[in-house]
Amino acid sequence: MKVGLATLLKFPFTQPKVDKDRVALGTNMRALVVDDSSAMRSVLRMIFRKAGFEVTEASNGYEALSRLNETAAPVDLAVVDWNMPVMNGYELVSVIRSETRYNAMRIMMVTTESEIGHIQSALAKGANEYVMKPFTPEIIREKLQLLGFEC
Image (tube, rainbow, N blue to C red; front, side):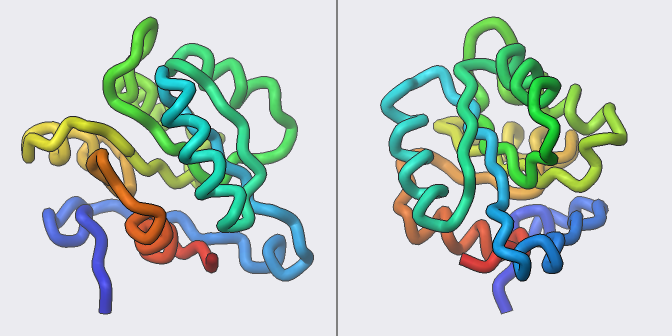
């Protein structure tokens, strides 16, 4: 049985459930990719589209909040870098987790920040998974499965 970082580090949170009915009806899951690097957004966009996600992008946390407010459909997964201008990923996670309308959204940090303190802080703030760059598509798929997505 595979377990995520939050489980290994014993962070007490309830994993949001994937809406299996929506998936069964053929409705794509929706991901918001937030990274200040357009090259990294492109790589992540390809991985998530191949996994069956509709992808929206933002280059910083502030822009991500705007994208979330613009969309009528729920975003199932936010994929968030830590180091970005205007509003960083940690601040974005804080804002998302402070709003109950985003309770069902999973958050995956994808970042170069590899210190255990950063990982613990992000998970304690409400990130559900943490991926360190560089990564492979297989690592992303494994994390998606840990989060309950079928891909």
